[in-house]
Image (cartoon, rainbow, N blue to C red; front, side, top):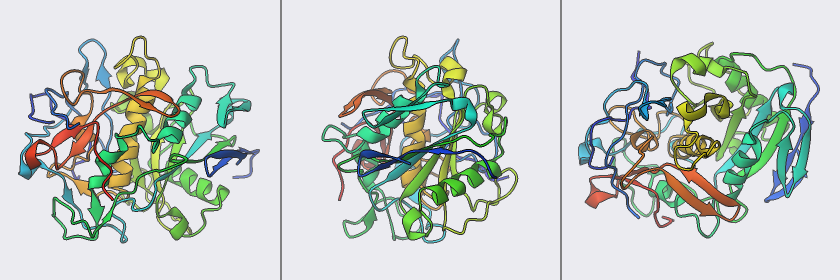
Length: 372
């Protein structure tokens, strides 16, 4: 089986379907209804997983603060920097302004109300949904330098290249209005342990719901399939991960690839992370910090999707790690997870890998100028 992404090192590194449906949508930011960082240490991530779990964020052992299992990410040398994968179906990275659609799947989410353009759900006992939406909505604000790290990457260059000319199509910046493009509560029945194929099908269904019915409309889009409390999507509770991302055409998906009439569909499997507590980041930056993991893990998958939209045709290292994998769960020193302030609030995030850091040897970065 191919090596999956999601690897992080414990060693010191230099940088290391007929149903009732309620819908909401954000259009143009209005709710309309439908510094260079050098990591000191990083824990280990899991190799004992499945090929489709790209960018799988490994669970932590709360007693040690280390991830449960993992391969080695190596040291920060040019050989360990991310390289361009040559694109799949012509898609390597998200070249336009990233657009995020969040889907709350299942009737368990309960009654929806809207406050200041953010959906609150009565079945969301921990407040995951508004925190998740506010984070994506705030990306691209004037204080957002975290998103700049990803814009150093591009597509349309030679396979194996590790840097981008200014003429290449770079990863887009969210810009005014943020990355959040729409929110949908799909109250149809949600599987208790959805397969990769079922999650991909829900993302395709969401594309139809939002009117993204052409390949062009899905080119810079990702669908975050968010599961209610008490569910176990892709058996995350026992498989040692907190979330992962992929696209519908991956033939290694559990249950097989999903056919899309709307072009390739990028999506994230996002469990109800408060159920996992400290194992998926609660309290990792703030105390008690129940929602820290929502944006640390969610930001991880978002960053990896825009730099590797159809995995692994975008940017990965020689071990298959993406930009988030190489900097996950760093708790202290430069490159550590930390709070960033956006126009919508303060959120915990992790650093992501920048090939241009540390004099070109690569580093985990939290802040970077926007590369146009």
